[in-house]
Image (tube, rainbow, N blue to C red):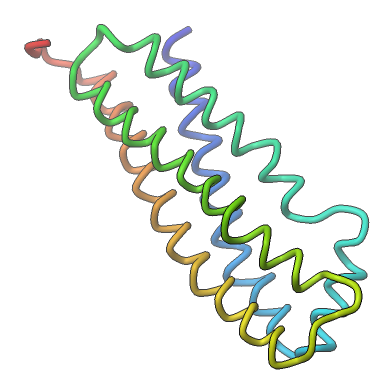
Length: 160
């Protein structure tokens, strides 16, 4: 059961990372392509559902599975604890970025009335640039999760 939870946590975290990269490569570029028209189109397109719906489900699930992995594998090795702890911090930090940085900017961009074009360009640029930072933080978390999987399978006796 430990193995399944650990591998599921890595799978979900990898999915969250790649969805975040997709946001940078596709959605952010499309939204910034023809401001203000592209933002108005995004408002219509994302009226029913948006990427936040994906992240709102899979990001917490990834964090819970990583925390469970940390708890279940606590006695397996000290290095696993460290890797899973760093991964968990990275995944939580990704959500901290989302709630403190990205959601406020997205809310401003999607507000009624729509902000002026210059404000939208600034918000879009800030959002896009910072999303690469968030992707990097999530990438570090995924690397640490994979390192924990490596320790799980190729565990040598370590001092605790």
